[in-house]
Length: 272
Ligand SMILES: C[S@@+](CC[C@H](N)C(=O)[O-])C[C@H]1O[C@@H](n2cnc3c(N)ncnc32)[C@H](O)[C@@H]1O
Image (cartoon, rainbow, N blue to C red; front, side, top):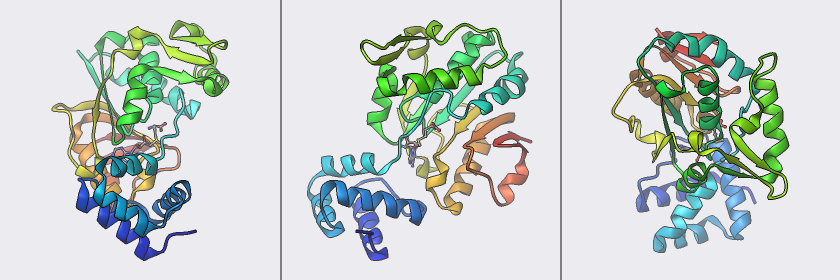
């Protein structure tokens, strides 16, 4: 059953009363869908969920994990990776180091896609890779670098599309693909490079004490309302070097004055 506006408010208030999580600036539409799923999965009304949240912190953490959408892929939206390879990365090839932050990295496929690309263009050793997510469970999967069977063909197709027309090694150079074990394992020279940290974008603080050449935040902001999106864009703007690139999702965009501080190329925004 669809939660009412009062249910949504009750749930959000209860979570923020008992933790640091604040969902009050999430988009009502997507939050309502997620809450409805939670009610179905737990066969509980919102007052019942709220009652348990107040008594059981582990349950609250579990609900927060379940409410976030973690879908991702290796080389998701392959065309963007061609733009990153041809248009973005060459801008930084003469830098001494290249700092990259993936905000809302989920299980790490985007992080590994970028590291594979940096390896292919000969900039891997200069790359410092950082990744954050609200959900610690997805960070643990990212740290393991192991993915399940059903994704194998999709990932190989994405890799082919992202590297089309280029004479590059096959995906096996970067991952062990076992159809027998039904797994894809990112090789350790790639999997061990990124630094991960739990981080809530709602805090509006950059968790890393440095500036970045590239920030990815794809398919995360779509869950927030426009005011929160704009505040996060400001934080990303402050965290980028001049000329640095912010890469957002295919269905996302920057609205309002903050957009004037970037030059826009599709879903890639270059800090002026
Ligand atoms: C759909 S995934 C996107 C993964 C990857 N960026 C991609 O595009 O394939 C969204 C991720 O954002 C994370 N997320 C949601 N709210 C967040 C917040 N307030 N702070 C940080 N991460 C958040 C979720 O846990 C989830 O892993």
